[in-house]
Length: 334
Image 1 (cartoon, rainbow, N blue to C red):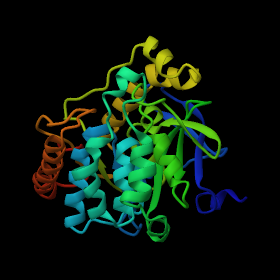
Image 2: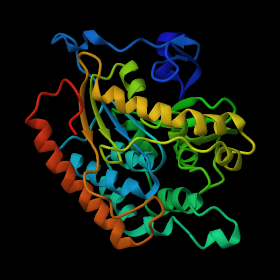
Image 3: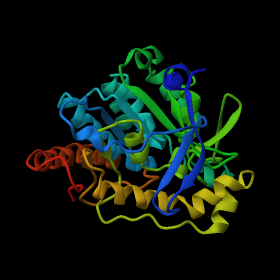
């Protein structure tokens, strides 16, 4: 296989290794043994075609706010991006967005998402997030996600996963019905599920563990105009997870446990810092909650989920007005 055609010929784009100039903020990943290009400062030139990207953060039921933002973008006609990256609940919403099936996607949040979290399972020592219901019943049958529509979409859609054997991020390009296995894997939230699922017989965990906000990846893939949908307020900084929780959540996969407890917060906060000072020529639109959300990660009340949807839509409209009044280059608003 010729390196120049990797993205067209495979569904997996795996980060095999990280070499870092600064372990805290400067990952220098390799893809399939081929070094990725550095951020393109020359993209600011008017003679270079600009490439758009959309990044959707996860957060379990906090993803209702992000879904409201996507609804607003759909209304505004911002439906097509060259690249889309998403993990966890963000990937589930992004799948319907990329397939141009947004109204059915909203139906899941409005009517069915409240059934995904089953708190009574705590008493039965079972996972409280029912991925079989969400992916196998809702997304395959009740509100079927069209694989054909995803294949025909002009967007390259990447579901972010975490390789359970290495702890490295994997960018699964959606190209066939394995999308459902990838969605189950990326939605395998630590402690709330068994923590992993299989794609092609290999175990993968929530992509938000290894690369919670893949903005560096988007830039390295050539994106110049990037829209980021976050699910936390502007003051949020992710804190480290205690080591003992990693051992409890991932007893079979010490590499994932180590990344979750020692690297996830570093990678998350480094992505926030990168967004505040993006490379030359990179334009950013960042949407984030400004008011306290009416939902938490495990909210099951349908009215609160609907309120989060509405809030995401309304705040996206307000933030877009501010963004359009300011230059696109430079630090992130808020």
